[in-house]
Image 1 (cartoon, rainbow, N blue to C red):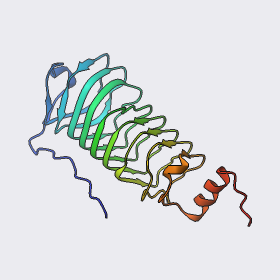
Image 2: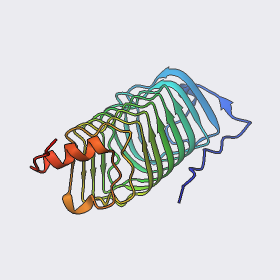
Image 3: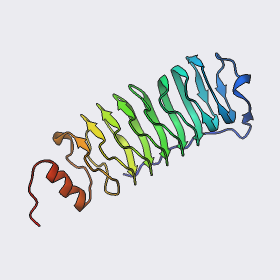
Length: 211
């Protein structure tokens, strides 16, 4: 059954603002921020709803217990940030740099990543439902202790990634790079791959392929 991801609900009355105009304890509601570098912020218990961020550099910040809903991130850098995120719901990440992203114990629903770099990212004990990775670099990501629910990987680089203790039934990786990918043998039942990938997987298990 094909799943449709619900897109963010952005108000037509969205307000353009600057980060300096926002108080630390504010709820970010229906705001648009563009081309800013946000530095040395320590933000806790923040709710982000209906916002659009474009060309924002979020480096060197601490975000604790953040919830993000109905928001769009375009050309943003969210790499290697010290943060704790409770949930990400109905959000889009487009052309974003997300190196070292850590979403441990985070709830994600109706989220799409397009042309994003998620090198070294971690999804440990993460709730993933209706998620799409399209044309993304997922090299060396770690996905542990998950139950995929309507997850799509389209033309992604999963080289040296690890998907452990996560059932892969009906997951289609046939147009992705999965060289040296690690996963549990008991979890690959029903995984969809192409002929060449199947040969690589067999060789990684010690089988000798006779041409």
